[in-house]
Amino acid sequence: MSDGRAEIFAVSDGTGETATAVVQAAMAQFQSRWRLRTFPDTRSESQVRRVMAQAGQAGSLVVFTLVDKRLASALRDEAAERGVPVVDVLGPLLSRVAEHLGAEPQARPGLLHGLSDQHLRRVEAVEFAVRHDDGANLHTLCRADLVLAGPSRTSKTPLSIYLAQRGLRTGNVPILPGIEPPRELLDLDPDKVIGLVADAQALVDVRRARVGALGSLPSSSYTDPELVEEELRFARRLMRERGWRSIDVTGRAVEENAGRLLELLGAAGAPEPA
Image 1 (cartoon, rainbow, N blue to C red):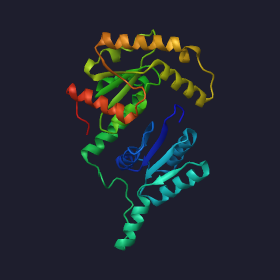
Image 2 (tube, rainbow, N blue to C red; image 1 turned 30 degrees about the horizontal axis):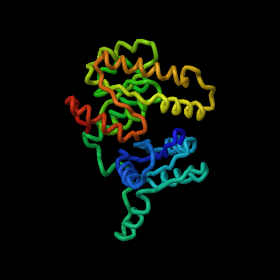
Image 3 (spheres, helix red, strand yellow; image 1 turned 180 degrees about the vertical axis):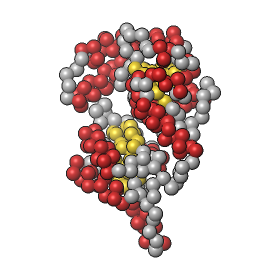
Image 4 (cartoon, rainbow, N blue to C red; image 1 turned 45 degrees about the horizontal axis):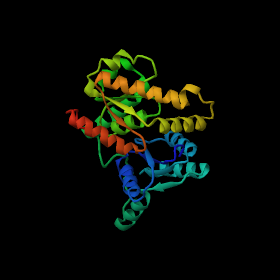
């Protein structure tokens, strides 16, 4: 909760949609600032350990839908060791249904969605987002359905992953102050690119919190309010010149900003998410 928002991890051995829907339904009852990070296709104990290590460092609540009892048990063990609060969405229900039916569940991940074309597209989109995070693999950026561009800490990565889970191949590229963006970004159809900006002071606060969480010394240019303001002016000017639409991500959850991005894409006739 480095920037004052409660952080919730949704861990699933499938698409993560069930855990996400449960979290969203629960959080609708609270007038609180929060953010969700989803970890789909979690099917090994090493993945569980990595996710729980991140949750422990971030002070997050973990909501999980793991049908494999072995993995669910490993997650609970990690949670107990690290002091991470967890909610098992499916476990109690599966136990009651098994008792009622006198049968054992199959414990096979992904049965709800199967290997449908939509599910495969989501998997491919998530892989694309990971490969094209923070300006990586620019030579294949042209294959993206959407590219997010903005200064550091404007939620480019979490938005990219969230949209990828909706089936959109999403890349993201940082806009650095005073530096010409890469040609691969500038050559894209402007309708494919959406800029991300934020309130200057809010961005300073997020960056300072991030630096503090990492335990490193802050860069004067990275957290200086005047320089951050100038950085945002540079980014906004670039967006206007390139004809990129933009949104202000200040104070909104990933889901809300993703919804606004999808609205912009729909208005431009971009591919519908799977």
